[in-house]
Image (tube, rainbow, N blue to C red; front, side):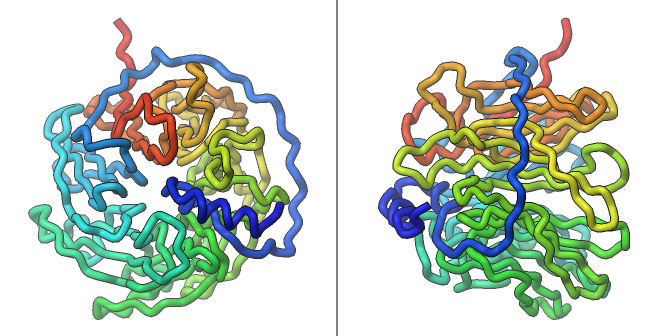
Length: 431
């Protein structure tokens, strides 16, 4: 690939915030990973399986919802939806006031390009605060304009912003966990940057400040996820780095905050399009696995799907070993979520499409890779619209005990049709 041309296109296009989130410039590392063998994906149509309902306000113009997360923010026993609106520069709370009914409230505004939100009790006072990652600007920018905020909850769902870090390389994700065993919540942070980015952990000093420790200096970090990956009771970090690096990294924690970096996957295709990761025990063997999508299609003169887009499962075999599985091809794949959608005791995988041939009436936007019970997967198409979805989450949002799906749309390029800002899919009830 001509890297200088790639950088020029990313800067010149400028019209797509998503292109900035997942494109940039840099040098390819020396790691070489064998190219996996791809098998043809079995596809079934199941668009009558769920009922789609818009939730929240309509918004103005094409929506730019960069992230959604299900959480019971007010702890009333009903799950709510949190969302980052990158066009309005706000963090939203869609409170579930009755089963399947939501009331939208702006929790924070005039934020510098919020792209990720997590609900966590940062100050141990019994209520949920919000950890918000901000890029500063979603268009290509090499300046240190990123920031990380905590929206502190007073217990009555009134939130006061507190800056954890500012004037840093653009921040795309942050998670809270106690990495050094001192009882305080530390932070794992992904900084996309542009020419240069970082993955770091920030040690909680206990006085409201954090000490920053760099784990990896590479541009293009998208996500950080936290779990005990090896059963030693210490929380580890798994991260994905996009751009032309296209790698999944595993930072193994010694238990006292010392991390060893290993590459779990790296593509020899510099345009692989890494678009997100999550952690889930897919085969229910007690070990957390990695779900990994590659569906970015913006860093081109012609945004859209690519033949190598799809979903991967990095199976945790224990003892630090992981096995690569190509779950299936999927154009524009984003936001993988593991969930038992049907209550069968097996884990399925939900994903959305951010880039596809949207002029094609059969272009897919929401799918589930249905597990047959032996960890073989069939892609079932759940929806063809709204289109350009880049974030989804799964949880019970109607109080019936059945998992529902919520997704946000980010319309970064035409056609501006079949739009939907925030959409809830509920399982259709049998007559």
